[in-house]
Length: 515
Ligand SMILES: CCCCCCCCCCCCCCCCCCCCCC(=O)SCCNC(=O)CCNC(=O)[C@H](O)C(C)(C)COP(=O)(O)OP(=O)(O)OC[C@H]1O[C@@H](n2cnc3c(N)ncnc32)[C@H](O)[C@@H]1OP(=O)(O)O
Ligand SMILES: NC(=O)C1=CN([C@@H]2O[C@H](COP(=O)(O)OP(=O)(O)OC[C@H]3O[C@@H](n4cnc5c(N)ncnc54)[C@H](OP(=O)(O)O)[C@@H]3O)[C@@H](O)[C@H]2O)C=CC1
Image 1 (cartoon, helix red, strand yellow):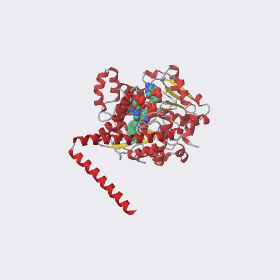
Image 2: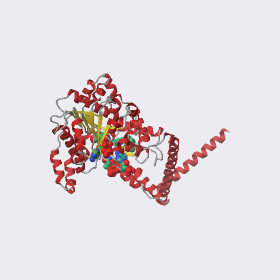
Image 3: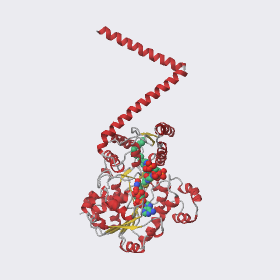
Image 4: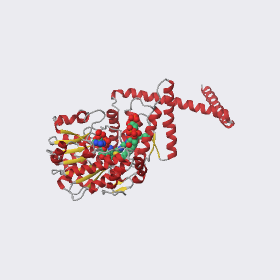
């Protein structure tokens, strides 16, 4: 029997961010491995016209939860969705709900965050810093609490190249930042934001670093651990390979590349692509929850959940495998044929942006206009290029994260736990993983049917022919213009034509002689 699974049996668990990518996989695994857990409280807000109950219903009815419903048929009774908005005081939780949470919770997993890179500092501080502080305050009033697990990011200190399992201080104390957000107006916040984030690339990584400082400062008397995952990708094995449900990180770029919108990117081919499957992160998180509660380490332990130092894969290999998978399982109705050029040179990258991205979008919009339709491709392309520019920082650098705590934890697990809660990324076969990832993007994000593959392949063939035709026409036009303007070009042209003529005459004469 798995010790970790047994540990969660009969427990009341609180999860924030349960409706997010990682939160859903965490809940799924908990129910699948510990079906007799007591209850999972999830803090949910209504969204996109759906009530909290409707959102939970939708999650439970998704493909991700199919296995869970077999193993734990009464799963809906074990989820307690609590109306909450982490942007508000006391999270806008009702008194009765708060009372229940405080008196019953055994374990807290804090996953909620804003992961947008360009969020406004006030909002990002509210969610990634103030909400963490409030949750810790709540945790300190939970008499039955055994462990509090905070999900951060491996990039919270991405301004460093070697990152240890410690909390690095930011220049301004989080408490001061929280206070100042209450009285500074937006214009001043906008002005000071670049100074505050310093050499970090965005507000997200900065506020996640502040969040860690808050955890450190408020951790007195609490049994806390921090998990720092790198770039979280689709599931590797569980509950099935390739599951993904949002566009963050590589998933959006895989779509953009597969549909032929994005054909080149400013990236360092040999830089480490530190991807980590979401089920690996979840397995480590659950193992950390168990270890923190049972072994009660004296200080707050930080666990890096990264792949680069144990099983590195670089962007070139990743791009290559993504392209190879597009050959086998192309996406439907591609705009252009997929390609993956990585260039480190800014000028080359701008050239390809103009030629390979903007120009086709403009031509396509011209075609839409001609056929009486509304042009839209230039707008889509501009947004995509803005997104890509925000991700570029992460594909042009490599980081080294020390993983002593993660390795120590692995050695503490029984063989059964190492199997059920596997977070040993050395066992990951990248080629297989990336192929399943691309397939998952096709199935679960694009909702494309595998039956459409022959037609998608035909479509790519047509695109290739259009591409050749277009290039030939362009070359002929350019050549014709050149001949009209330059004596040298005319001379070269006559030389080539006469050479071909002579060659053909010789060939014809020699074949006549043989006969
Ligand atoms: C040659 C090509 C070869 C390719 C071959 C393939 C090779 C494999 C792949 C290699 C590369 C891997 C790079 C990974 C780097 C990850 C680093 C993570 C590090 C930290 C990890 C973390 O610790 S934490 C999670 C990370 N946190 C995010 O990753 C949020 C980002 N995001 C935003 O911060 C907002 O999204 C932002 C952008 C402001 C726009 O903001 P915005 O207001 O303008 O617009 P929206 O957000 O509404 O999105 C507007 C439209 O962009 C679409 N879109 C959204 N995301 C997208 C995305 N990633 N890729 C594409 N498209 C995306 C969306 O679907 C909309 O499309 P539409 O307009 O058609 O609806
Ligand atoms: N994805 C990645 O690549 C990485 C993620 N991480 C960290 O992992 C954690 C989970 O990330 P991930 O699942 O990908 O993120 P998602 O964006 O998928 O999920 C974020 C979650 O936070 C919730 N949330 C946001 N704002 C509020 C609010 N005001 N009130 C209540 N809930 C709110 C969201 O709820 P709702 O559905 O209502 O919006 C959602 O459940 C985060 O802490 C992130 O920093 C770390 C490294 C990499």
